[in-house]
Length: 405
Image (cartoon, rainbow, N blue to C red; front, top):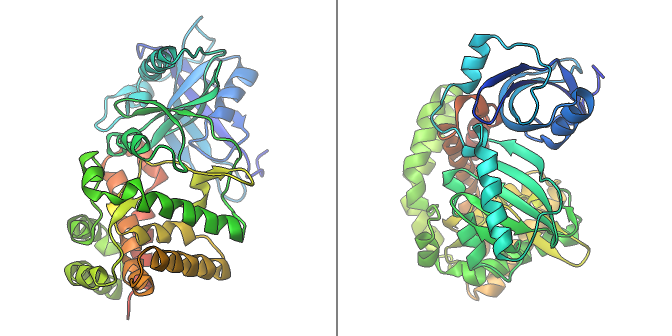
């Protein structure tokens, strides 16, 4: 087990639904290396320790080295008979339960139960009943995701931070396109019908092109009205609006960049107004931008595709989505996808120059990624920043690499 990279070691600090301490567990193995993937953690706690829990949040990570698994500590909520646990040290408990700014509702004792109550009301209003206990799939700083067995099949309960809370409104607007079926939405929560098929992290060439086509169809349809989208609370990623947050992330990371990187990035940010004029001359209009359009955020079968996770969405140039989509593709596939993307927009907007637009947008798309990750770091509690602790710097460097000089 110690040299198995597919596992991690976990320990739980356990409280009840009111936050009263119950104790801590011994270390146990979890058959997944992904810290936010808690379904196997919950199963291991049940099967190995006889403990029924809800994971509230990650507390600490000791990164494994030389093939050793990561050692992770979580705060978990237990209800029912008091389990046999080791008393927890007061200092550890105080740190785990101390209120923090930006703590998400699902990361607090009793928080998941409030989301379940909302979901039950939504289901009941549609004549749907739950047929088994909900299954916790994932929890981290950006979402809490549960799979709910019902008389209408599997339903998904998803809770998100305030900066993603427009997802339900977006799904309502683009209903009927290649997006999940919305069953209900509230303040930072959505209830979604199941999507058949598989997550498509490594799509074949034809599937990747179909994903681009599905996105453009939405952008040319209900995603074309930028004013209406802004009215739904979507963030503004049009070029001038990126200047202030881009200066913010550059200022925070300046000491981690070399002098040439800083000069290149400052020139890009200071020149966004001029770049906007050049971009406008290319003729491609601003639209809905997915914001995290990597292939794994699509799911489907051989004949159907659904684009997931619209909480990251905003308004801006549609080619901003190209950066995340092609990031991990082999060079030949990336070139084919980008060529298809450009040709598709030039067909959609006759007389436009999508090729030049793509070259203008490319570094801006990477810069936007740095801005987004910095926004996460600025609006999540310290314990959970570990998920993104260097992502803003990574994307600043990628942006600089795309610039002349």
